[in-house]
Length: 299
Image 1 (cartoon, rainbow, N blue to C red):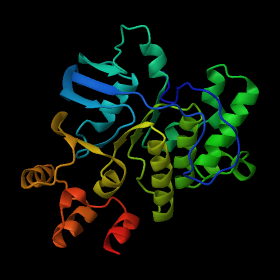
Image 2 (image 1 turned 30 degrees about the vertical axis):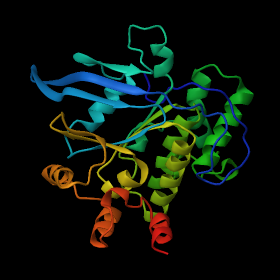
Image 3 (image 1 turned 135 degrees about the vertical axis):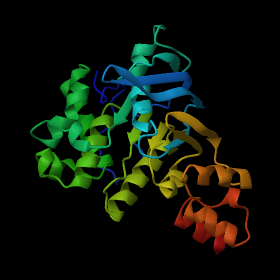
Image 4 (image 1 turned 60 degrees about the vertical axis):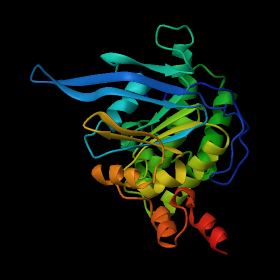
């Protein structure tokens, strides 16, 4: 099963600025995990990767998945996407589990963008790479073309300039955006992203944040695995912290003294704007999520 599979209707291929909302993307789906456990096998011995992981993410919600390297973040994303089956526990999409009739179709509405973009790029041109998923789903060619052009425009790779480029002739940031376009072309309702900001220059990071905000604004459910607490705060309403495969915290951000101690215990700091708001004597829980919000509040 490919992490790029998803389904959805076709939208117009009108050019748009990166980050602009896209017609055709359906509202998000809800996600719930209950008691999920998973182990890898090494030298015929099980190595636990996830231990009794439980959380809920409502449709249209946004969740930051955080924790140290090796804490189980990537494994959890793969289990949610159906690439690995949990040994115990369950994953529900819109309340449906694997034994329910709608589950297979809902899984195709889950998009996964891996941390390393080269794992998802294989065609001889950017257009062919992005078109792979919609064609595999049997869409008419005109619909495929519209979806590809829309997705390339959305991620800031205008098809008139990038469609015929070889994926490996692109920069690292462009490859990351092309991998995202390959998922967005299939219009996922739940988008899983594994460290999408790694090795990106500041301009590309800002553009990717804008794209993800636009998806959030139209109701796509987002689950973002990242080490960057500032970007997690900018994009996500809730937090899930893993440590050695176990849930340390789950739910809305908590900047109370107890919440601060929990972040510190998991080697996480408070977001910059939260710390700034605290130093200004303001309510940290109401801290802005962007420089623009901070400037407006302080004006």
